[in-house]
Image 1 (cartoon, rainbow, N blue to C red):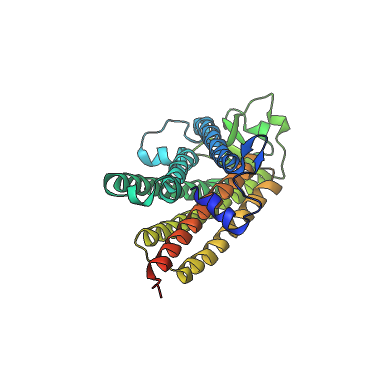
Image 2 (image 1 turned 90 degrees about the horizontal axis):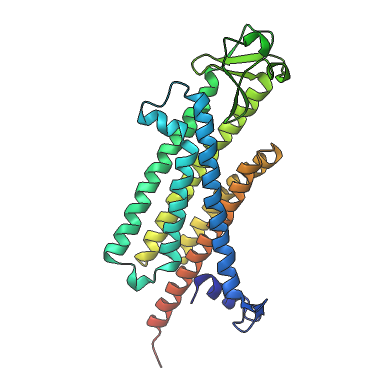
Length: 302
């Protein structure tokens, strides 16, 4: 039985009855369609973030990428998104798709090794986010009165985090701000207002990435203890409280992106929170099933 559906049937038997249908489809089936539709939307976002990183790297790494560290910095969002998407699929396999009796041997090792590799990429991506944030400190107040004065000296200008355009006579007059800042190494220009926004968004990326790392660590602990039969209700509740705080931080970051008009980041963040709600639901049902089996096995007939 689907673990999510089993939870719903246990809590709301009248609502989740297998005979209930919507548009001729069972609710169990519709729930799965909804879940995997969310996963598909996340994959589409991965493609979009890859495109954004590629376009931004032409300005932030104007002389080309000649080291692995630069590659991770240039494609931090892409690598982070890909690694997290694969991690999501691994958690789905661990907590829902693969039955306990089949999650052994090579299957278990393959899933766990893949998860470890993805976690290492996530950590590397976090370093990339941090490096991107520190890049903002390399901007210095310029001697130019306006962007047009920088023509011939500066090649690009920033309109947002990871959004850059070539500076020319046609667009320089549209760049306004109380002062102009220059990143000499990357030949980038940014108004003071845009630079402040870039710093805030880059810091939010760091906080968001770090929070997700803590969540996946706790989830990995949950899964490991669950497989060993050591995830007690008390320990599970403690972990839930801790993760609730972390999810609140993620939600706050999503809200900040929303009010800052970083709509793609907001949309992506909400999809990820929903996706990991499914994983948490999987884990909850898995723990409930194991606990019920333990209680049943310990019952002594009169």
